[in-house]
Image: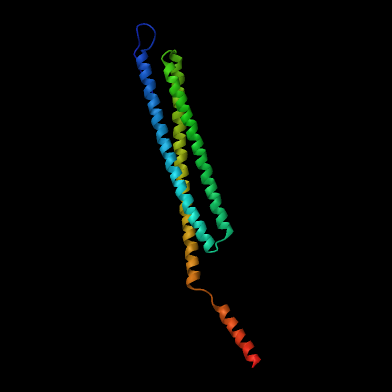
Amino acid sequence: MAASFKTRLFGGFDRGDVISFIEKTSRDSQERISILEQENQTLKENNAAMESELQSLREICFDHGETLQAKQQLEEQVGQISARLASLEEETARLRQQAEEYQGMKDHIAEIEISAHKRTEEFRAAAVAQLRQLIAQQRSWCEISRSQYASLSDQFVQKLQLAQQTIENPDMSSFDEMLNGLQAISDSLD
């Protein structure tokens, strides 16, 4: 962001202009951090909902005698999601700390020379680039997670349909064989 400052007859730039610019830059950074924190909260809520659904699906799998492999795959996915969430929380905390440091520097900016303005702009550009990178990573993670969740849901629907078919059409032939065998033994006793 380019800024133009009024100059004074003596002493360089107008102090009020510099302070106003820094305050505006600080507010912009705080707004971006707030947006990231809201996105982080939404991701936490989504993760909690997914964990709840996963628990329900685990119970269904256990009740219907699903395989251990399906359970392990679900646990791996939950682990990956949890690890990603922890990484995002750590990144948000780091960005919050950077923003607080930036806010603390605001009180001292008015007394430093024009070179300090250049360093501030470089820092801001790096923060914006980092925020853009985080937003891109978040979007990518959301798309991947949505796809994985849809695939997992489809797998469970298929397994539930198979279980329902097994319950609706049980194989009773072994009972018939047992009854015939008992009848043969009974007949041989006569």
